[in-house]
Image 1 (cartoon, one colour):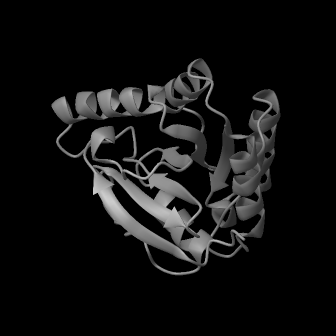
Image 2 (cartoon, rainbow, N blue to C red):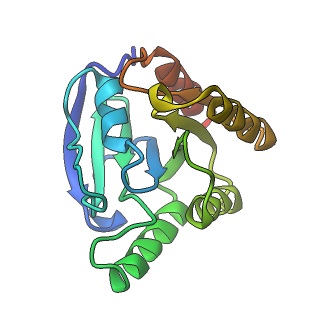
Image 3 (cartoon, rainbow, N blue to C red):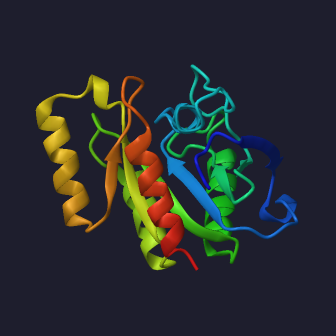
Length: 189
């Protein structure tokens, strides 16, 4: 049974070639720098596995977590800000394009800060997921800091994309996010 409680950090991969050798379904977490991917992993699992940095752009690799000996949850570098800029942004874009087009990726979770409008990077990530026909869900983070209007805007976006979604915050129970991930896992080949 998958309940996220037996999740362990496995390894950091510089490229897809460094990924775990044992094949399992891979669900990747994508989002802007500081959107809350590490916090989301910690909420899902109920303990601190992923490091949440105060400064953006700290995650540089594909960080693999093994969930209940069932599938890999992959924390990807945040987009939109790369410490060092320029060349590092190009490296990031190449890493994401290569990873998304690989046969390793089964599904994706796109995390969006509920208080922010979609920007060019968010739209590019959505386009990449849609182009590569990767099943994905939306998780709107920082719900506890959002206004009613921001929540309504998020719901409209999810309906426009015809995409399942859930809200996540430090104060909320992660049960709806867990259910959403499990339903995504069931849709993955």
